[in-house]
Amino acid sequence: MRSCIINLWIVAALVVPVLLSLRSPRGETQTQTTSSFSDSSTFSLKLANGFGFYAVSFPFNQRIRDGSNLEYDFYRDTCPQAEGVVRSALTRIYFDHRDVAPALLRLFFHDCFIEGCDASLLLDENNGDRNRSVEKQAVPNQTLRGFDKIELIKEEVEQACPGIVSCADILALAARDSILLAGGPFYPVLTGRRDSHQSFFEEATDQIPRPDDNVTRTLNLFNLRGFNARETVSLLGGHNIGKIGCDFIQQRLYNFQGTGQPDPSIPLDFLRQMRLNCPDSKNSSTSIDEFTISKPVSSDFHSKMGMSYMQALSSSVSSGASFDTHYYQSLLRGRGLLFADQQLMAEQKTARLVSAYASDDGSTFRMDFARVMLKMSNLDVLTGLQGQVRVNCSLPVSS
Ligand SMILES: *[C@@H]1O[C@H](CO)[C@@H](O)[C@H](O)[C@H]1NC(C)=O
Ligand SMILES: *[C@@H]1O[C@H](CO)[C@@H](O)[C@H](O)[C@H]1NC(C)=O
Ligand SMILES: *[C@@H]1O[C@H](CO)[C@@H](O)[C@H](O)[C@H]1NC(C)=O
Ligand SMILES: *[C@@H]1O[C@H](CO)[C@@H](O)[C@H](O)[C@H]1NC(C)=O
Ligand SMILES: CC(=O)N[C@H]1CO[C@H](CO)[C@@H](O)[C@@H]1O
Image (tube, rainbow, N blue to C red; front, side, top):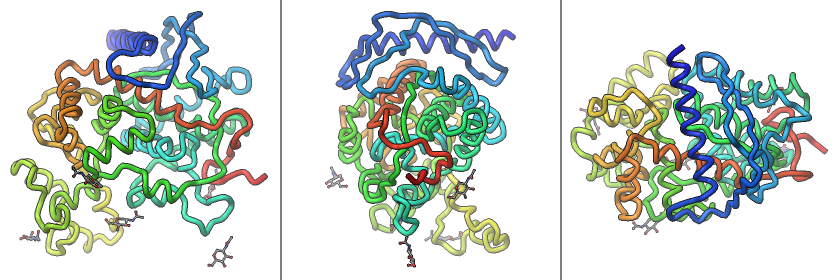
């Protein structure tokens, strides 16, 4: 019981500053968001925290305006149970598959980054043409997971309210609830997104940030989506949960920029540790391939391997909490897993932000992370009569 109360307190303590900080953005934020909180009313929110559902009340204006035409609780009349169904379905999945949280966060990011949060990433075909490539094939070597989980959640929502709730909204809500379940901050998700008819393979191939990007390119790609340096550094902090797949680290460990050598900037002890977690997939005499040969079913064994930022910091941090500063602490010690992560230390502007996030108990990062997630959730959404509401998230509804 005591832990429940503490939990509630933490949630309330985090939510209120997020809302307050939206009212008066500080620092270098140049958000195009114009949030108005003029007539504040109280609303109550049900939160799943692993112990059950608890109602929390805090002052909150339901009419947040950000130019996106999304609304708070868009389905209040048409499907009032929608958000609750998403949350309870996800909570059930989460306790069997903890890795659903980072997987859905990643899915959502990849969806929003390419032509907005319109569930285009979930499509299996392009404009009714099964032969044309779709976005999900473009994302670095098809390493996205969680499509089946979104499909499961969607099925439950369809049972409650057929044909009402968009896949784009389900993904946005499920990503938010995933972050919360993984110990991250709460942020309000506006709804009313519609699903696109179309998938965007070429855009996804060119514009998704790559694990081997330098800081200039990373900042540029995020800037094209309206994110400044501070928002970019906080968003990348999402890497603090889940594993980074070996596929993304492989070249850095064994053949950095075609040299046949590891990235010289990796500290030697960390290189050894990373290589233990990610053996060279191209070296046929390593034990991992013997394993693969003796167990043919595990052909994708290597691609499931990876390393987390918790492991990167290893015993130097005792905290068991997951959504804290350990990503930034790792970068400060030169123990970034992705080249693109460690590159944040290569430029003064971003390095200062990394130090700032690493220097407190995580509250600055959590607050900025909540704000940037709220902003990302509203990127280039389809609303009103645009797009459609898909019944099966992988298939467009034919008109
Ligand atoms: C897809 O490709 C196959 C074989 O190349 C072809 O027979 C079929 O007509 C194509 N379908 C469409 C919808 O273009
Ligand atoms: C960063 O990468 C881009 C292309 O990926 C390249 O053109 C640029 O020269 C690189 N910048 C630095 C400083 O290495
Ligand atoms: C391949 O694996 C063997 C045995 O584990 C090791 O001795 C050798 O150095 C590895 N080769 C490369 C290129 O990593
Ligand atoms: C959705 O469509 C896919 C085909 O793209 C199919 O495999 C899947 O079973 C469908 N899901 C449901 C719930 O009908
Ligand atoms: C579909 C896709 O992005 N494939 C890429 C997988 O990674 C290799 C190199 O690691 C690329 O050459 C492929 O284009």
